[in-house]
Image 1: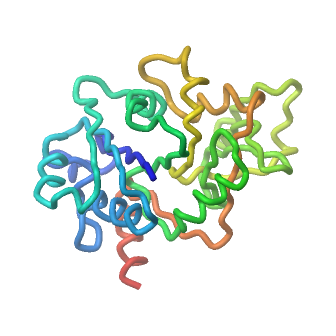
Image 2: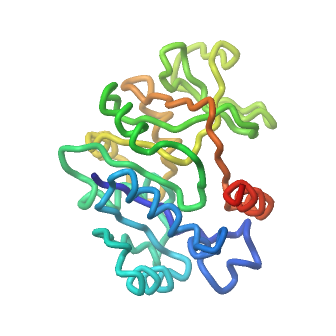
Image 3: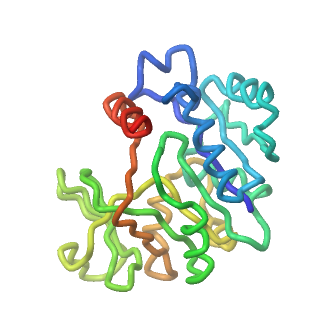
Length: 243
């Protein structure tokens, strides 16, 4: 099974920690956050992994080499010249990710107790274009899903901004979920991306096509999830892992 780890971020929210090292190598409970994600993927049966790099990318490559790629087939998608955002990053890695099986995407700064194999199997059973890990956690921006768990729109609670390609869209009629930075995609996704080039966010892409195809939620009621790209959550994640 194949997976991609987003590790190209500059880590501006973690400054000054990221002034000399990439966010992916910031230690968390004794190990770099990248190692936590790699080992979680390996335990779930993902043995072919591609990692995008940008900020201090060579440090990530050297770390992988020093650890013999943790026994996995690990490739690098080099974005050192130009950051492509999440959607552009996936499309750049197309030659690696294409095939007959779905692939999983995991942000390097997401630490959680989600069962990645169960998420992958849920995607296989339902066969949508994409399956998104979501939860009811507090945030300012929410994805909006209908009663069949299909993505229909997006809402920013703080600004009131709403995005949807459905006519006469009323956000109050839908269920709000926070995206968890982990998703499973069918390789058919690249057919939908043909007209998308360069840098673009995957969420904007999902919103543009969700009225034409199925983008499903994978809600997890007992999910513990930490976005450790923020200093306060870095400390909370360490406490959770030690407990």
